[in-house]
Length: 445
Ligand code: C2O
Ligand code: CU
Image (cartoon, rainbow, N blue to C red; front, top):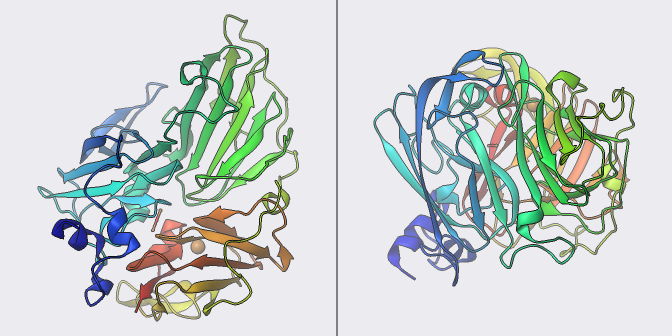
């Protein structure tokens, strides 16, 4: 193993551990056989961005764009991104949301690196071994930086092309659609007004919807039956065809929606806003009427009862560690001063004790929400398996997620395998909540 990958793969928490581990190997400095190196330079700078409607907004951007450049790769490629900070005071990092990179690439300031200040740069390097829909964002003062535009998408496609049930890549429509609120308007893929895309009837379509905001969005796909093929980048097992349902997409979450293009229009509607919808129009056909007039009272699809079960890869009842996190509001220190803040077990970051695990542990979390707000819970570096919501077990396809929405009064149980050594943030992805203290660290001892 080259010395560099040992160092790069190691987080601060592993300095006394043997050099070779799964995480270190995943951080190897070369692509898998047959893969290529995908190099990008992302320069963070302040810029005026012109939206589709012509409106100009002051943003914080990567390379002058919001969202930042789309990063795409094929499974096994090496992704190498040089982050430069031109003029963002305070600093910037890149966190690969949902992507289980080695700890040293995770982009958490004060934990895996220092924030990259104006005039500085930092290179991230990791193998694209995880297929699916992800995103990246700054993790420094992210409650400001992400909202202002420091985010982009990361999509990794399987090696060997399409799966058997899909046609050739040229005939597919595959759209990556980050949803982001900017100055009060909800933008789909950076567009602040209705957009149209042509698609030939019969074409396989995949819409990768990404919530880059701090609160949930309600997603409706109108005009066609469809399947939720993947949640948070991970494919579901035998997802059923559904139609006329609403999808609850937590902050930070992703849903991949797949269907065959019908011979009439299809609309992707976010938060029932018909003026901002994305519309697919049958190729060569007339613009057509809006599918479904009123999307607001469609029932919500329960993903815990969707698709077919598969046995978990570990015994979820016998966890090596079990942590309970009670989410609430209360007095805690914020920025060095006592404040009425978002708390975990009655405390705010950094006064919340670290959660200690050992490599190989099966870890169980119980997350209880005693507050009146929804908390999208997010663990870095590991997907978690949903076990139950308010005592109702997950009985559909295994749901491996990186963020789950714990609504007021709810209790969620999740489990994961501690297989990625390092120090990892474990926090609410409502980013202002995280800033106010709803954040702690999971650390391998
Ligand atoms: Cu997408 Cu710690 O965050
Ligand atoms: Cu929260």
